[in-house]
Each structure stands twice: as C-alpha cells, then as structure tokens.
Length: 127
Image (cartoon, rainbow, N blue to C red; front, top):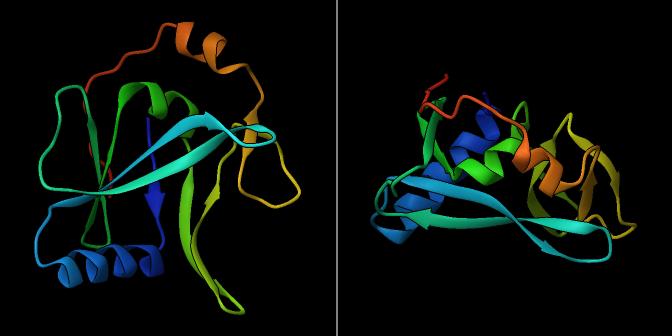
C-alpha cells in the first residue's frame, strides 16, 4: 500500500505544522458525504493513532487509517493553486467518478466491497 506526495504538497504540510506550532503529520481520510458519495478529510495530527499507517515523502508525514487506505491506496497528492483557491489535489487510481464541483467522488468498487477485501494491513512507510 502506498501514497505519495509532490514536493509542493509536502511543503504545504510542513508550513501548516509550522504555522500551528506543533504536530507531527497531516492525517487524511475519507468520509461518506456529498453528491457522489465520498470526500477527503484533513486534520493536523499530534500523535499516531492505533491502526494508522504512516507515509513520509519530501520531509512531510501523512497518517491514514486502515479503512481510508483501502480507498486512497496508490494516490499521488499534489498541492495546487487555482485562481483564489488552494487545495490538495488527489490523483487516485481507485476513483470512478467525481461530482461537478469536485468536492466528492465515487470509487470503482463500493466502499463496503473494498473494505471487505482481504488486505495485508501491516504498517508501512514510503518516501
């Protein structure tokens, strides 16, 4: 299982942690919401929770829970500025469709089917 960051995304994570003055990583995940079904969640993290996977790239760290990792596996995350908007942009090979506003997405397999797939969930790190 793997998630990678561009240098821009890593820089943004480090900036946010520096601005906050504490923290060890950006915690990302998914939740059910929106017009297409799923959306990304973001939270600055102070600790690694039990069952979370840690990924490091360009000097920044991501934390992802096991259920979210099944959907986010293989994602490449960039940080983009488009006009007045700034956001993390996911290139996720598991996405089947996105809503018109870009806030939610659907995966090729229903989340319940993905979550039921047997997967080796041993913690791993990547760079």
